[in-house]
Amino acid sequence: MDFKQSLEELSEKIIQRKEFIINEEATKQSLIIPFIKILGYDVYNPLEVQPEFTSDFGFKKGEKVDYAIKKENKPIIFIEAKFVNEEITRHSAQLCRYFNATPEVKFSILTNGIQYKLFTDLDQDNIMDEEAFYSFDLSNLTTTDYEVIWQLSKEQFNKDELVNYSQELVYMTNINNTLKDLFKNPSDDFIRFLIKDIKNQRVTYALIERFRPIVKK
Image (cartoon, rainbow, N blue to C red; front, side, top):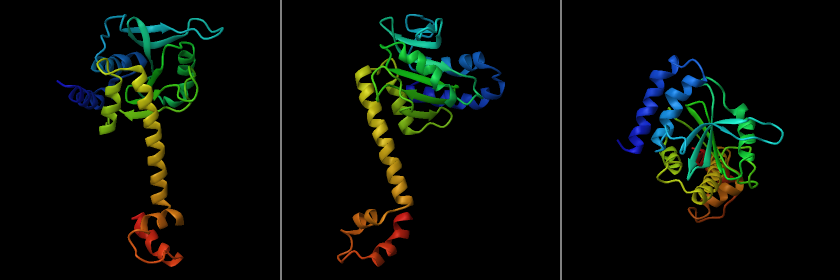
């Protein structure tokens, strides 16, 4: 079974399993560990996937992140797991502490087994960004989701390339959002830009207003 098929199969199992998952530990066993296995990491080898990885921060000792994915016995990705029915957004500060305390880690994942948020340090080195550079829903994957998840796999993972890729994702997301807003509420300048080459006449206010509903549509 190839990578995409494995993800599709896990996505289908979410619907079957969710109502029977009663706590965080069950979420890990039923949804998160299978996801890590699909990425190609050996979940039974602590040299590759170490549960309860210690990541002390300042005076706070004994801080443990749920999983550290490792390469050459050094952590490369942190995963913080939450109960499948829990809203994960409010837990990013906890993951941020682990991330900031471990400079060699450039990527972290916050998940409840269905919702995944991916973080890095684009704004400031070794300080986890407040906003995820990418988010996806494992129960409803898009073509782009498959591409992003593949970048996290053991076979594909390259720290420097993934940093650049994550920056591109942020740029693309911002551009897409801007374009969506422009088409939903097109400014006069935007409409003028779109129609200046298709109408061999002076672009007047009346012409702009004529095209406004067309641009929205």
